[in-house]
Image (spheres, rainbow, N blue to C red):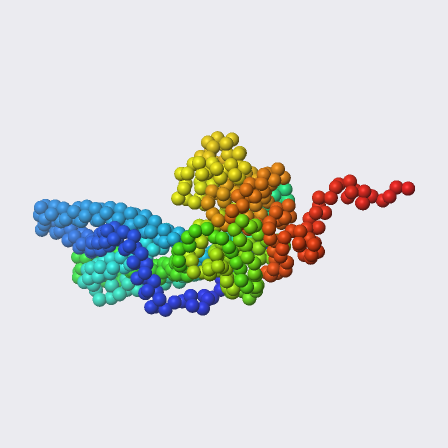
Length: 622
């Protein structure tokens, strides 16, 4: 069910305003990320930034001296050589500033690129280590999206703003020392004039963060609604049922909700911003009046007045940069907390445990139960069965009975919350999930359609054999995917429509490639989750014949709603409400006349001769 349009902004949730200690820890962790990404460029950026911070005061002072010398020259008291010397120093400072700026920008860009790669790699490594259950949790997925969205700017923003703080302090001290000579109250008034604008910027910067964070889930829903309209796979159904207006209306409802929140923030920010600008203008006017009074009394030179005029902008900009830097670091650390929250999620080490070696001969479930975290309902309860090498086990049940969860437990994607799973008589938890999974191959009902070459679509099940052309071809043949030979570049043809030159396949063709992927891995356990759902009758028959041949010396598990497939199994278990209610062979279960027999009879009615159906529906003729 799609959630409702965006909710109004709320007060910050408990715990959002972290302690100073927590923010300090996040700051240190962020700086470690930056330094680890590229120590050389981090150091180069910091040094050039600090050196550049001393140039504004030097330029102001040299400009003052030059103006004073020009005033003396007008009165015949200065030499041309003295003017040229000061001009030369001023030009040299300009060249030095340009050089430092060039090196600073280059090092920042290279550091940013290294940092984005480094943090993105950490996110991808973390995502690859999360349990499958984590991906089925909406809160975890929100954290992933928030972390990924901020990866490009936030870590670098914290580092550059921290360096800018140090640079601003150097600039403020040096320029402030020059302006302090003009009068006791001048510098304090200029400093005060900078504060209102900074306060407004900080206040609404935090509100923007909260708005974006609270909108994460709703924005994902809005993007999903947009993707339904633009999806190449869903376009037929959307057009046929004609629910584009509904999707557009829902999409626009979310936009209007976001817009109301944005308008509210902009309206209040504009009002506060105007008030801050007015207060700043009055304070600067007062400082200017004091300077003009001293000028009228002949207490300052022309050069001193230039220091005041140019210094106002310099000090205001520096103070704003200093305080905005503190605010910016705080805000960026709020976003960094999103990244750290994701990186601190518990991992599941798929390599932890003993190494499983050799084929799996038996699988036994003993009183196995499973409950998803943070829920109070058991998906599976007290499940018991044993299947041996050379046998096929079919799992039957209505949707929601727990069939797919059982398969996820079997393949170590999930771990039981109660009971045991034994492999060759040994507790499966002793062994690393990854080593156990190497002995298993599976086709899921929602099998992957990888926008890669046909060869890669098959060989991804065992990437160490990616170049095994004969193995790939053999798997394709066993899966009955002869259509591959008709593709423009055969196995090297790119598939899907995501990239240029890709060839889209039908649902049945994609499923045959998924079957080939299953066959490509030399596994002792084969799991078929609705293996013929997208196939026609002939293709289904061919697939089942291939399945019989492959399953002779392996353990085979079948999940299917088609009893033509299920009846081939040596043992069938019927799941209902997470429990096994019946088990046995096809013939035995029919003889019991229970749940399985009822489902079988219900499906068999669909194959009754048409003339029998028609004759039973028509009244008898007189």
